[in-house]
Amino acid sequence: METHVRFGLRTISLVLFLTLTTSLSSTAFDVSEYEDGESVDIADSILSYGNEMEDMEENEWQMVQTKANQFVVNDQPFYVNGFNTYWLMVFAADESTRGKVTEVFKHASSVGMTVCRTWAFNDGQWRALQKSPSVYDEDVFKALDFVVSEAKKYKIRLILSLVNNWEAYGGKAQYVKWGNAAGLNLTSDDAFFSHPTLRSYYKAHVKACSFLQSNRSKTNFCKACFTVLNRVNTFTNITYKEDPTIFAWELMNEPRCNSDSTGDVLQDWIKEMAFYVKSIDTKHLVEIGLEGFYGPSTPQRYQLNPNAYAHQVGTDFIRNHQVLGVDFASVHIYPDSWISQSIADSHLPFIKSWMEAHIEDAEKYLGMPVVFSEFGVSAKAPGFNSSYRDNLINTVYKTILNSTKKGGSGAGSLVWQLFPDGTDYMDDGYAIVLSKSPSTSSIISLQSTRLALFNSLCSTKCRWGCKKRNVLETVLYHDEL
Image (cartoon, rainbow, N blue to C red; front, side, top):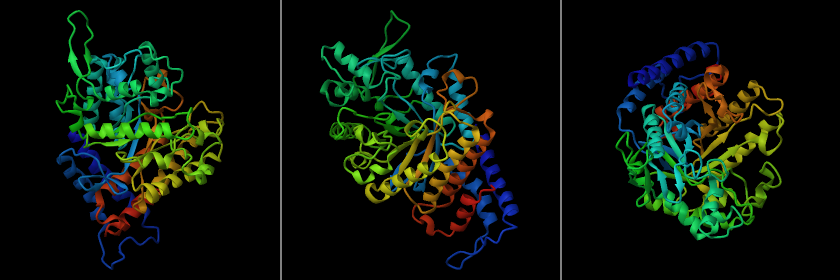
């Protein structure tokens, strides 16, 4: 594996050099002179990229941190090109499907992706991680261990989401069912955010688990008595909260509290849970999992929302992300869900303006990175074709690059979603199988190469004032690459 990675890095640098020297020879773009009058050999800079990255491979696998509005690893920028695959833990729990976890990491790594967002929850469902409040299936926990260990093998970091707003994989509705089974008589799923018992259930999920083995069952269960974050991975022997493979903890996938349009209930929940997670794990980043809708604290931004009801779902992008303990912002992008199901050219300008607004807010008001942690288009949408999907992905990637050029808060994006071959039965319409989508694969690979080169050549201290600026601008924006 390590040999393969190093060979790939050297190949990338060679391809960059050959392509640039060919394509730029016919242009008037001057890349040899710098603003301070000094010159640099572009060929040496690009060819040294592979060696620099190889040296980084030899360094300790370190935690991702934030510095102002950027992610950093070992004081180098870490701009993200990544993906979602939500079902990894469930597939890893079955020997017959476990290989698909390895496949998706292998395919993602082959196009340079560095971050995966996935579920670290499955509540009260088939192959549940949490069978009932604070009672866990150790076999499924070992499956999550496997996911983390495989991600590390392929140098992919994980954003682990802790619960779902939606009913899939249990979600807040399952917590309410557990509460009612305990005699609480709850009438709304939004009680998840406000009822102290359900809040304690969520905290107990963050706080799992010690293991109890049953001699009478093939399934091992565990009862919570110390933190999930303190769990020792059974494959790597590394404690979760000490493992740099984990990029961040996500409080919830797409939280909404429709019963409170003021946003106060959800705000209070975010404050409590962000602080709680940080009190257990001070080393990893924390994010909320929001879709990015503007709420009552910024009515002047309502016009940027994708529809008239977005400001009424109990979320508030700027206010929510000002909570102590939240390290970076998250935004989702689904014009085919939010605006109209039919594919329309007007969706692309919306994507650009939606992203630019949140990047601006992250810079001006939040002082933190923002990750566009879900984006995509459904193949089931009327008028869908692969060329449109490529245009949508390109729109997202170019907007990220425009921010990167300025050292801005646009820290990366995660496409929804990457699948390996043979998993069509899990497809929600958004799946991208790289082997069946060569044009999309090329676009993803190019974005990865551009961001990886930037991460390698420029340190946070010099930002875009560094002497390699022209090299970076050439590679980042030369479309013929």
